[in-house]
Image (cartoon, rainbow, N blue to C red):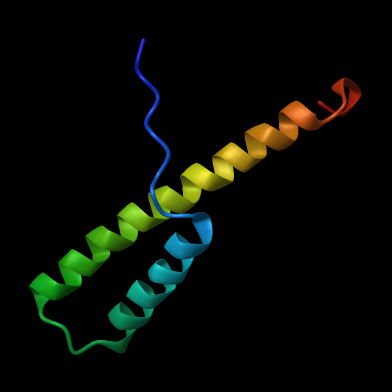
Length: 70
């Protein structure tokens, strides 16, 4: 049995905002390959943080829904 991962230190809103900045920088171009790869990797991490919060919210909503709605 695996241990659940701890909650990210960033909020959903913080991660989404930073992810939008990363995407903007990548789309803007003018970066070296190494800079682009580092930003891509950071973007992947941030997308994971956002997904964590969305999954958690979905789970909470499902638990709160009346039994007939499930």
